[in-house]
Image 1 (tube, rainbow, N blue to C red):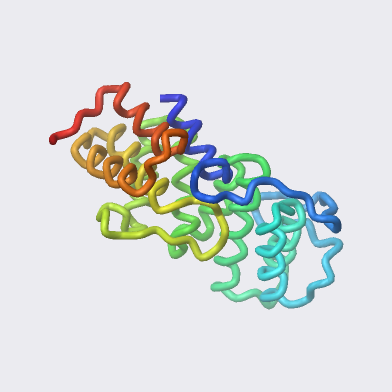
Image 2 (cartoon, rainbow, N blue to C red; image 1 turned 90 degrees about the horizontal axis):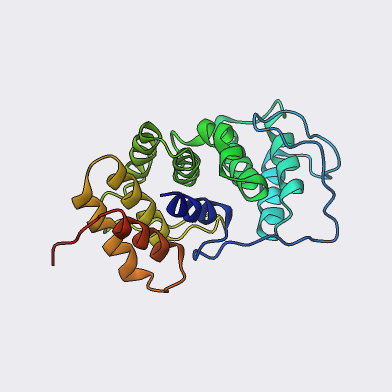
Amino acid sequence: MLFAILSIILIASGCGSGGGSGRYTIPDEVPSSGTGTGGTGGTGGTGETSVESLIASGWEDFKYGAFSSAINKYNQALTTVSITDAQKIEAYNGLGWALTKSTGAESGYSAFSQAAKVNNESRVGLAASLIQRGQKDSFAQALKLLEEVGLRETSTTFSATHPIGVSNAEAHAMLAWCYFWTGDPTRAATQITFARSIEQSNDSSVTQIYNSLVAMGLTFNN
């Protein structure tokens, strides 16, 4: 169980098979104190002025692994008086993923919670945060979030707008894990079989979750 949860944590942090950006340092990255999860603080150092520019620049930094700089920009956007509700969602989503990549899935929980009602990337991020807790009620909450993305149907493809590093196969594998631990092995088998059909690498996070489910007794109807 712990091994599979670790695999899901690695998916969220960009170390799974979904093309996560990893951690790179760009020359102008300067770690700042603006790393809070609630969208406050961290106003120094950026040359951007508009909310839209701050968010766009934050994703550029994110893409290159400059997570502390991205966190700073998202926080600055969130403290801007003129920010719209839609921009808040975008900024909280970016902040959640930057914190997750920087210090782990749990650190993005608060920011993801602000955006998950309407943003699918934040729903997936929040689900990963909940799964990390390893508790049945958390699995149930994560399952609900992933179903809200539409993943209950294997015909639904999760395609992130931003380079968060979570693949469609990984998202369905996360849902399989949640189904198993909330007492629905049939749907768990369907989801993990589908995930494996599109991600067959033996060292992928999807395969690690599959192997853990099989070891814990998941069976398949041929």
